[in-house]
Length: 186
Image (cartoon, rainbow, N blue to C red; front, side):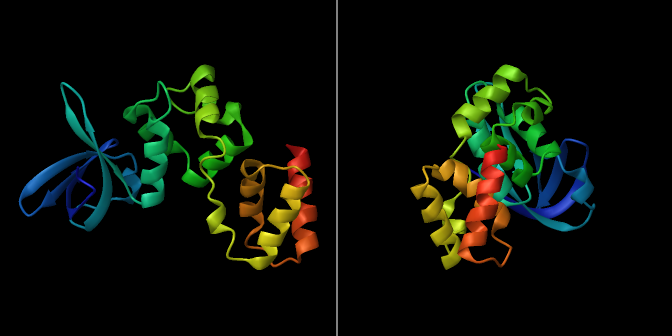
């Protein structure tokens, strides 16, 4: 499997980039042409899709985007082309937030995604995208998470809310109060 490609951008279009790696051109399905400049060196993280009639590469600028892509294609009925189209429009953070909050309407607006697929994405991925380990480095947040768990909230409900609050410097009671306010609005 090809994990990443580093080379010089030879050409690109709306849905692909052609990268020269020591004289070999790799055509990668890539949906962020605004970030490309011909002649510039780039590293693109890749997913190699193998089908009976085709081998193709899908490219991403970050490992976060790559990881989200892999999780999206694990959803029943969602292929790599649709997953790439989703990530071309939605930022990973916004998409994760929509999935964790169960926002079917936002996900339905993505190309190639209907109500049934949007519901399936939420069903398969909710509570699996936000890592609690990214929040635990703050002792106050850790204590606030414990308090919210004691109140009966699940990690899948708590983690997205706390991720929004993690950049604020609050005391434990304020973290809990703000988190409860956000959880109640859901």
